Length: 350
Image (cartoon, rainbow, N blue to C red; front, side, top):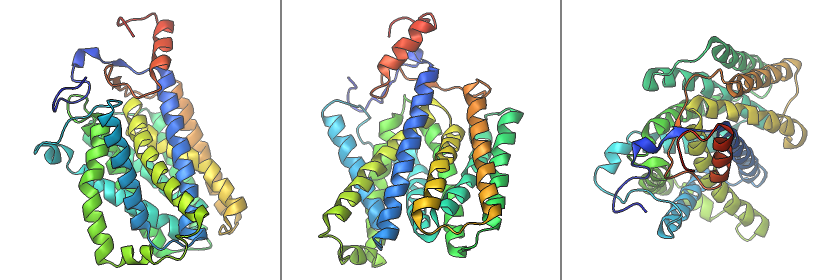
């Protein structure tokens, strides 16, 4: 049990390398959560015409706070109690967090689903650059080439966008910057001896929910949301609540994937997830305008993402992240134990 304000996993000598299974499962979990959330948010903001991405973001932050706090009270998870040093430890994560959250929700409503997912791929080179600068990581030439293949495809696809929306492009590019910076700094702040995974998630949401609510009230966004005419529609309310819950799952899975892998791998998993999102958007979104160059660009993006995945799973990705023994995320213990047996049980007990 974690006593007082002690952070999770405070003993450095209990760390060991993450198993390949844990890395793969955390990446798949993140991809599935991201995929589902984009579809639900697209339905809320476009199909139903919900006028307030900010209120949707507030709902997702509130869900995160409630779920993590109740889990802490029931001793399912542990993170340090609040003290005056926590804001300093977190900075600049809360600002990046809310910027990423709100720009992502706004961008979803401004562009067609396939173009939104293509432009989000610019997160990947920004993440690679920031990991090199902030975390001092180095990547192989094959990894860098895969990243630039993704960007080449994005340029080709965006250049032939027949529904060009400058405001949408600017918002999504800002979202790319916020996402890259948020991923890299989250990786930096997740030291098990400090706040740990759950502490980063909980205090990020706590620090930003009130300022975001103030912004929503001052801009009239909250009033538009409360006056929305679909609140008596059970299907709409169900999807709104689902979006709030999926928002929490996405935040958790993003941290989990970065914890077991790297911020760059998390960004690339998001790009691979967009294979399904883009093609489904072509068929059922109703707002995709087909052109040959756009379609070719999409496929180049996806090929680059899959190539990155192959190189990563083949062990060509140099950075490796130690895993905190004391506070392994739920559901990974059996996986870790099995992998440990196969590797010869180096490090003692499971």
